[in-house]
Image 1: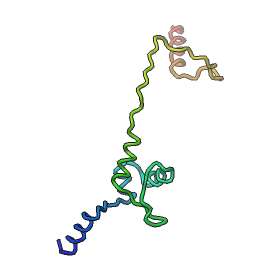
Image 2: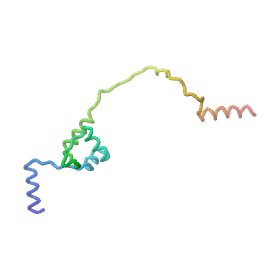
Image 3: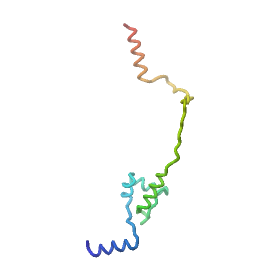
Image 4: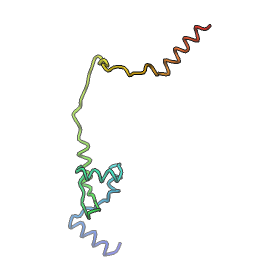
Length: 114
């Protein structure tokens, strides 16, 4: 490592600059596509650093905040029913189209032939 590189690292540590990630890196961390990362930013769900009008960068804190927002546990909902509800919708028009029913009726008919 050269002295110049060493100075740059020391300056970054003193200033407190965090390393910025590109959208591809953010997408890999979140396990989603780059397109989805940009959509989340447009929807206001994921924060970013807008470097230019076309370039976005992300800090670790922004990605962690998004993960934390998505990880909030919802209250547990339990549904305990002793009996199942009856279906009140009308059957589909056109009669039975199940292959299982056709085969059993065919077997019954063939057994009567003998």
